[in-house]
Image (cartoon, rainbow over all chains, first blue to last red; front, side):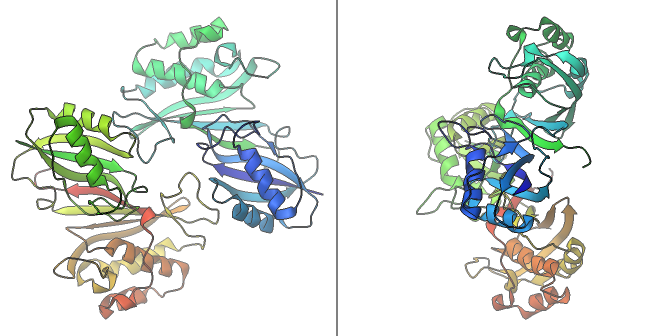
Length: 248
Length: 248
């Protein structure tokens, strides 16, 4: 048995999420089917993160265990062949020690959120960004974001469906930057609560529009109450960028 | 009657091209229908350039003549409303003098061609770039491209369906640059022949792969023979970027 770590890029638009769902297509189901088509084996995919319907990945890390003798490059090529036409690509494939685990060995996760700050509807970037017509003050958003960095109880920014044992997380980075007509929000932490990034982005967007004072982000955090959330940003703007592992 | 200049962005994937076709959807048909829905008038759209099926635009300029009294901003908003869900957006709308013509007043056209130089199939950039698995030498491509700059007979790089009277064109710019995993080719001229950019890109890609010597681009040009063309690059990587007009 060999444990293979895969780096996946996917367009989340047609999927109900990364993880297998009872009803509807998922990235997990598509990759497991591609492994079965390649090796004849029924495998279970484990991922660094769960992503919601419509959320994209530039570099999601997952692993599968394969009994058949196959080298990493051939496995990658075969998976990419069998994944077509699903918008999932294996960017990298590597044999790992059996105690390496895509989820439990992961020590850092990075997300990017793209806001298209323009009046016109999106065409080439439809389903790739959140279109916000009102001009956003990215510098105010960045300042307001800094109160969230560090170790906090993020109950306000947590989905009611979140399965994490504790609402305490340590946010390592939350930066906001204007890039031409877009506003990019980057978030990094060891791990995140369900909906945490989208909830933080939603509140920062309210600051950017001038509908919230900068201080209201800290007040929402201190409330530790989901009802204090201003806005949950839509899934289409969110990208899982990278998962970090010891020694990589 | 007011002549309105529109700046259009569109995803060319679902269209048979910008210009009206007997069979199938076109950008022209969609915009003309949106004008009719807004004003009740039957108009004819004139564009700075014709684009093939699958070719995109970041800033195509077109014009329509409208009799109804309407200001430019309201027209833009109404067109964007009626264009949904077609992937066409009006980025700008401006009243122009009646002798301003989107096609005949245009003194410059700029294109971008995106090559995704990677082994894995495209997901988020499917239909947005040409995927070339073989590593490309962008510097060699740039050097080879310079023989095409200037005034030449571009018969080799011209579709057999091209309707231009003369195969003589003056290419002002043809640059090739690596941007991370992509290779970007930019082309500028007063006007282009049908398929000229895609044909030039196809030959430069052969140079980038090492299948053509750099000098072969000049030899193909000198042949003045479509049969000397190495490769016509696919439409999905091509973007009409900008049209230039006197005094803008």
